[in-house]
Image (cartoon, rainbow, N blue to C red):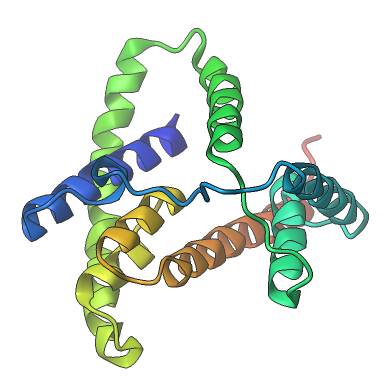
Length: 208
């Protein structure tokens, strides 16, 4: 619930705030999309095969969160090597969002509404603090990175990879730069939590 609310708060408040600041809608509300309109049908099975191979390699190599990091690594390898450019059609993105959203939304079954309201307040406080921290680093590094403040802010914002990339398109910025920041954030979080959990399990004595 906390992770859902964090993403919802960020992808709602930050684009609205930037829209008010700039004076025009940004992101998906401005009609931006990352999906290519002319993706050939034969590229779909190649993309699915790359995901399956990445998942298998992630399992063999014991990647943390292998269902995410494995396909991500395979897609990055194919794209950076120039062997195959992975483009996903909009209809496949829509289908994936429906499947993933339904599966994740079912986890809210039986949730007490009072807990949800409490989680919203806690998330507003937490996200507010994280956005202030993001703003600090964006201001501190924008000269070094030679990027404007708003682009650095959406790069450090705590959530919403796709929406922040769409906002980057609205700002005439490179969405790859923003996406790369968020991919590193996710990988550092996943790997760091996996290592920390393993360390805590080894250092905590078993209950007698």
